[in-house]
Image (cartoon, rainbow, N blue to C red; front, side, top):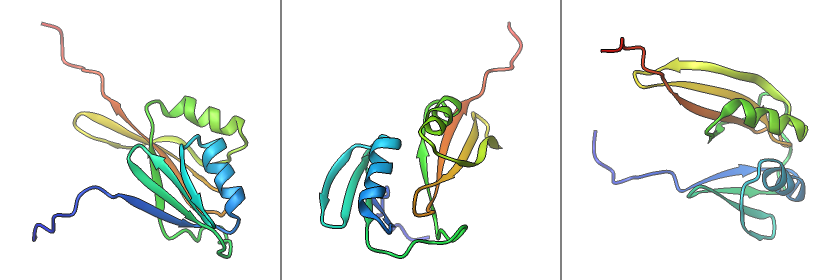
Amino acid sequence: MADTGLGQVAQIALHVSDTDRAERFYKDVLGLPLLFRFGNLVFFNCNGLRLMLEGGHEPRGPGHSAFCVYFRCVDLVPMVALLKADGVYFEQEPHLVAKMPDHELWMAFFRDPDNNLLALMEERKQLSTAPAA
């Protein structure tokens, strides 16, 4: 495989039907820092990754997201409870996805007001099960 020089993803774009509603959801419910807004384009900072919402698109029906945005979090269960208190419905509760050699991967899935699939992702460190010396 050739080294393309590509690095981390810099920006993700989501189409939304109502720019104002989407801006409120991502800013007020998910708590993402707003970078700026230009017309129907709204930009958020996701810890160095830029999320761009582009308004004016037709809403999608259930299950029609072409991709999923995964938000890393430190403690999944309390974060899910916090978002539920703000009215977010989770399609899948926090659950173990995979056991890695040094951590467990946990996720919970939900949708934004335009039916874009979103997920919370926690990489839990595994407790050492080695016998004490």
